[in-house]
Length: 168
Image 1 (cartoon, rainbow, N blue to C red):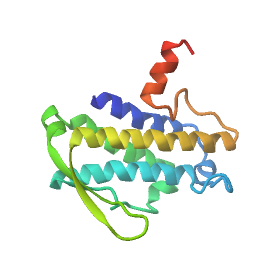
Image 2: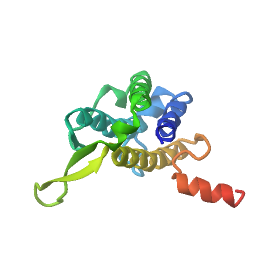
Image 3: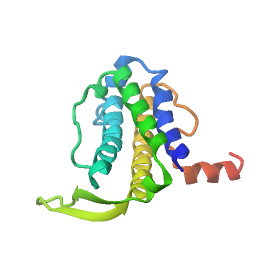
Image 4: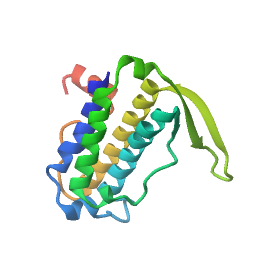
C-alpha cells in the first residue's frame, strides 16, 4: 500500500525536475487562482498535518503552513516531498491500523468544527487522492504554460487502470 502512495508523491518530485522557478511561481490568471508551488504546498501541508497529527492521535487538516517556502522554492518543495516519502516508507502495518481522530472545519457560513474517527491507512488514502486532484490542476497550469507533464500525471489510479485495460 505505502509504495503506491510514495509513487504519488514521486510524480510531484519528477515534475519538479523539468520546471523553471518562474513557471513554478506563476499564477495563470484568469484561469487559475494558484501557482504550481501553491498547489504543491497545499498538498504537502495535508501530508504534514497527517504526519504531525498521527503522533498525537488527532489529525487537523486545517492547521496548514500557508505561504511556506515550498510555494516559491523548487528545492524546498523537493526536500519536503522527499521527507514525507521517507516518513511513509517507515510506517508499519500496525501504524496503518492505528485509530486516529480527524478534525476539520465543515461549514461555509459559520465556524463549525467536527471530529471523526478514522485510521492512519484511511487518511493516507485521502491525502493521496487529494494530491492527485491537485496534480490534475497542476497539469492544467502546465498546459496553459505550454509545457507537458509526465504520462498519467493527475490521473486517479482507477482512471489509469481503465485506460490501460482499454489499451489507450
